[in-house]
Amino acid sequence: MSMTEEDYAYDQYMTELYEEHKAEAIDEFTAERLQSYYSDNKLLAQPAFHMLNEAKNLVKVNVTAGFVFGAVAMEVGLKETLLKPIVFGLVHIASSASLVTNLVMSHQSMDRYKELLLQILRDHGGVDLQIYKRPSSTKTIWEEIKIVQTKRNHILHAAQTASLEEASLSLDVASTIMGELFPAVIIRMGLHLHDGYRICADWKCKFEGTEIGKFMKTT
Image 1 (cartoon, rainbow, N blue to C red):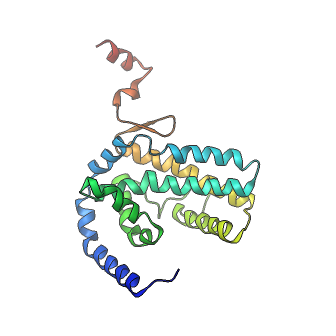
Image 2: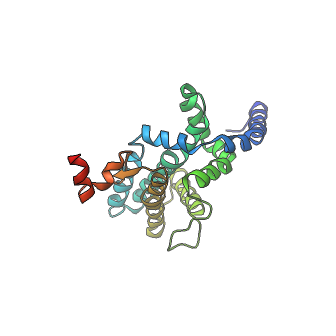
Image 3: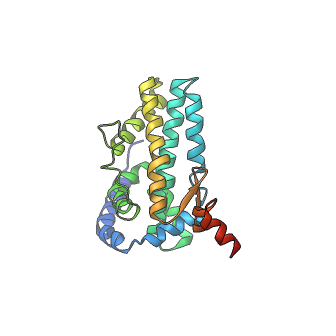
């Protein structure tokens, strides 16, 4: 679908508005907003976590299907566990936060707001998607995300198939997001995880099964 003159005008307006308020948004963003979102949405990682497990099982039966499920886990994990909490934290009016979040998370808007979102993720979450590389890779995780997305589009729109190597990349990138980057941000927020995805703010859990934990239960 081609863009109309009104679409172009709106896109230009949003770009100018973004550039005008980018620095202000970065300065005003606080870690407390990010921590609050995670604390209020303790199961936000569950869908991506379960999808990744499905992908790992499915790739043994059908490589292309396993690739697609891995790509879905990667994208949902990226948006729901790393980027959406930041967008939500940028919105001051809670009643409109969900609407604005959905708009910004669209593919077209993502390109515009990428630098802002990634900078806040780096500054407050301690994760830099444009620098981080998996131990076995020469590419950054952001570059690999784009590679997986491109292949996913070719499969869905051109009926291509995925190779085992491509499926492995899809699963590895999703696993890195869900198993390393997301937990790293959660720890940075002073929180922790149960079962690999459930966010917990109860600091006493860290001492479960230890002598300190036993002592706290008796006091």
